[in-house]
Length: 204
Image 1 (tube, helix red, strand yellow):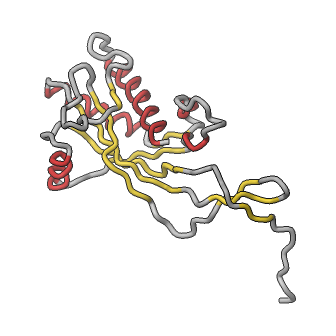
Image 2 (tube, rainbow, N blue to C red):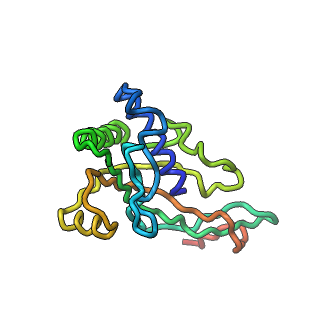
């Protein structure tokens, strides 16, 4: 599901910037935004002037809230499969503008911000292609996305320094977004429970 989300955003952002710039010599479809890590496992930088922007997952955390309940789906023999409550994740997604020309990099960061200012929420109703990268949705429903919400995630200079130090690089023009309510849901249940056939509220 994380891959589905980031592949979808990569494609949408790529198309938005190409249309916004109207400059086919420098901004052409599928050559503007790349989904990849900034660094290879050996520490080698992966970014190049072949693309304008690199999208990468910078971290994640579980969004905890009270009242989460198990989910029940029908099974044979009038029973139900009991599924654990969904894990709701907040993703921290880093958009890095790495063109060597500094002015171009700043313009690219502005384009990212403009894109999410115009489209802070993504769902299947407004974006029917949101799950287009899922090849077998019936067999792999856990890869599907219902809704994504993007908000700029501000960080201090100290946090920014720690982030780039952790990645083994110097600061490159970039912006971090917090993607809320991305749900990871295991649909293969093993535990069964009988259906409720009657309710007794007592005399009172």
